[in-house]
Image (cartoon, rainbow, N blue to C red):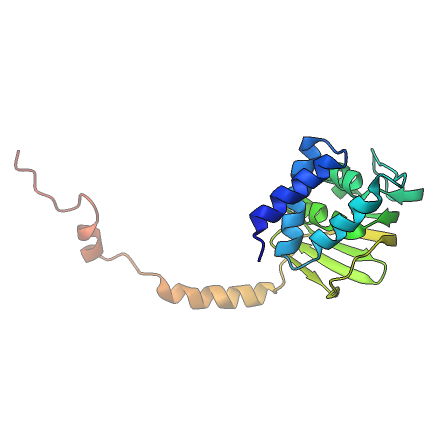
Length: 202
């Protein structure tokens, strides 16, 4: 089995070879490693994308709005880099849409890393596929196939507000149980604390 480290290095070098800068190539290397760690087909998708990258005129995006539409297909790498760089501003939208994105799985790790940066879970719907990003720690999804996805007609992203999954009463009940581990301070305990009861013979 090829190691994640080797996957990252090879993906980085391949990205540089097709014309991206070393800085962007570094990010793509990390992303493909992340996809493979999460069990998503990163190598398959980046390999296929690079086969058509120089033959097609993919669209870049510099500034995001709530609705982002292109007649041509967006480049998932440049869109992802700008999404990540503008993450703090984009999260203020709460929700945004992207239409016509080539090889959309390559956007997934950018969104996952953004979830960690902004400190919010992100829900992404890619046509009929759904992804929930949890602070770059895990990805929940109904996408279980290892197939190459060449295009997504519509992607919607929603930044979710942080809230507890339990009620105040449930928290109070659990906290009350935890109080059984608390030890009340006694005179004997005070005597045993650092510096207490020592005799100075000097």
